[in-house]
Image (cartoon, rainbow, N blue to C red):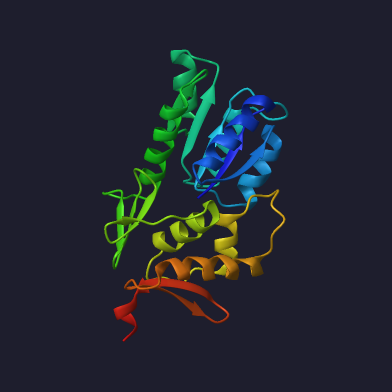
Length: 225
């Protein structure tokens, strides 16, 4: 899952990036509203975490422009403005949730999970493909009754395929979910992670199918016959 963090306090931003990367999210981070507006007009994100008091372009204006483009990406506002007026202004500008600084990281993590579930319009946080299941509340994969151990990038790849189970996902879309702007990696490296995840699915009834020139497809193995 790829998240855009927009925060001008670099100490806080760096801490949030490290924290969210440990939670197996892919993070792009910018420190002003103009850069955020540019990325939001050219890139796709599963969630935006947005400060309001930003240099070069105010966070509210970033949010208004984003919504004018009909972008439905969930937005969580983080701000030091802990007032009713600030809350109303942020929600009226198009935010989905609002947290005041300082905040507890566990609450932030829970709100992120809730927004991602809501953004995916899931009535239940659990997805199933054969013996493979994914719990959106805990962001854990299980194969049968065993938790599937994955590295952060393996997790990002399988999370993207699971969200589109039964449908083809291109290498470019997988790369977007695995790599941030600062990662030095190409689309071709996706094959490495597909190979690693396939090895962890060996013996199950789930398979990752390669469709030459198109991408990859996650589906139950019995659907191949």
